[in-house]
Image (cartoon, rainbow, N blue to C red; front, side, top):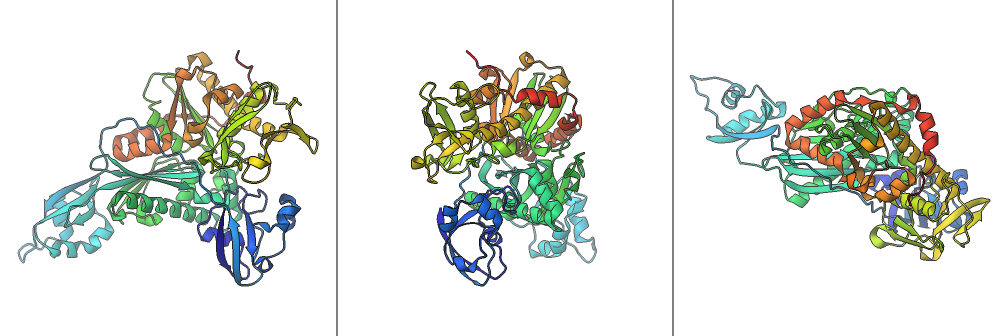
Length: 595
């Protein structure tokens, strides 16, 4: 927690003021007062704010209200003045690294040194034609054309010309670097990679929380926000562009280079992210059937989106596949090489929106599963995003039921994040606290207790936490997690059935995504979240979407392969798939424990 002084004006929402200052809340309701994730403590100036709303009184305990705690989205300034607040610091555990297969360096951006003949009274050939002739290009970026007469007359001799395909992007009197940026735009996080396009060297990386999180923690919350607000899509787009620009600035500062030398950007994300980044209406994704506005690749000038780069730079967005399976899943597949081999393999990109791609060695199938809300801490009593203090691993001793855990950053526990939740489920199941149906049993330990008639298990006592409250897992939490894991398990089973692939046929299982990188596979297998394959067949890819984006930045041929792959993949809409409901209901149970 940090203390923060802010100035408010009459009518200001505390949530909006803090957001405008760059403070991000892990909210998942879009500021409607439903999730309780925008808690702040008013230390001075409480009389400047509206009294607690009914929604606040439902979420905050009376003692919390008396201590000055408020929901920022519900507190409105009644007059101008200064406030002193205590606000949470968000230190997200963001996975940036990803396995990148070696690729030959063949970017679209190149440069050449040319000598442009000077005009004369006998040769009145326009500047553009003289430049195109010596470069072999066929067009010149309009911004570059505007300044071409100045550039060509500033000095005589040789010029460095930056080209993309057969377009002149820039004419320079001094040799400069050719840079590119790849960005994985995740629902929760953004990760950027600054690359030297002349050498293929990764110069710097940067990551941060996706600013869109202020409008909803999951995809559908943001889609709903965009449909409810007249300028909702514009707000989502501006937040995302601002977030990407911050990463570009951070990466350039780390590498000691100028953003003006960036000529190419490759960005990937799920379909909601893809559409909102381009300012495309999300109405087609709001209700079934979930139809894309386009599934073609998009090339657009960076200046049209307001991105920090050379004004002639291009942005390339690979095509989304279908439904909510986006270009991030496509990039992850490119990084894994799943589409290139004859191996029978499955790629599971675990996250807020889990995407699954299955290959039978010839054809590929894909589906998306709504797994994120629970595994990301939403609807979980003590759930947390992967922030400092979140419990990320759990061990429960059978017989004594004593708990050992670790937290992100080694801080006092404030809640439990996705990897910790999966560990907790598996450990409680192995220890006999949960049965195969997910029912919590009353075992002989003070950690297992009833509150308001509902069983819960204490993972961390109040005296050892950073909140002063017990961190617990309730029976209701278990049910929510079962729903999430069942969606992934059933989705994988449907794809395998479609492809005629049996469990024993799987030769490799790729686990990707920030969440997939940090989970304990044995725990995930114990509860049925991942297919029951030997650990020797598992490959952890890390941020595979980011790795795939980098590969497409460095090798243009991989873009063509990705575009062909997007058309080749057979999309399966699980919601209407025959047998999915039955598989989903069966998957709610935990599989039999291994001996």
